[in-house]
Picture 1 (tube, rainbow, N blue to C red):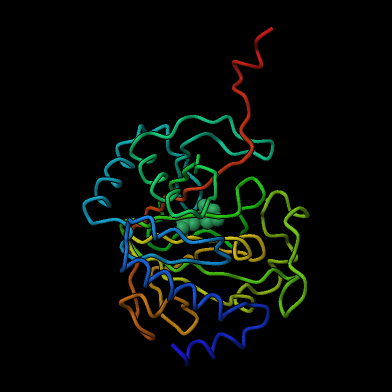
Picture 2: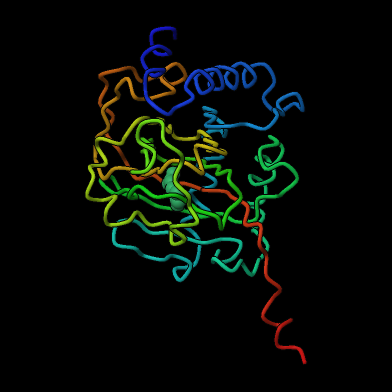
Length: 275
Ligand SMILES: O=C(O)CCC(=O)C(=O)O
Ligand SMILES: [Fe+2]
């Protein structure tokens, strides 16, 4: 623990002691009181990782639900496919639809952790990644409340964090308002993401990861298009996973449930049509 603390502490711009401490705290709390109210914790400021947040039976149940959704529910992108539940989040807001019970149950469980404060998660994005697929570095942006919670199903992945071009070193964080589309700009792509990758979190199947506050607002995150992940010292949750530095983990098909809150909820179109 101490060695890793020192190793990551030297990374510029990162409040690492806090991160390591939070990983440690969450693990202790998790073991001590999985679902009791004492599991609530105040204003988190970075990343929390909770292994085995759901059981293997729950994982299979959720996978069955995802794959029994009607075909039109899927949107096929070039490097992954996805389902939107709860509405389509847009810059101007979201016309909210109720979450189905199988997702609402988990949105409520995450809400109980206290990370969304008084808000209820009202949107779930389901992503399916085949081995070798990923999502390029991006920020989720101001459409969402700045906490993202993700349950991983079926396979592990490595979630990678990158500095923006403007906050390599200790400079001020970049402003997501300048980049409302949340896509990385052309100039960012020119600078190697490899150079700006500062941290990864191994997301094991059945785990929950919470990306909060600064880690949400200041940095980019993404999943590399790889079929095999190598565990390195940059993996911040090494102390809480079964893999160790040097291990090579073959990816399988991973389904992620990204559970968020869209603060701006629009009145339904029915309402607008009323004279
Ligand atoms: O699949 C994941 O874990 C990450 C997905 C993600 O970053 C997103 O949909 O914005
Ligand atoms: Fe994202």
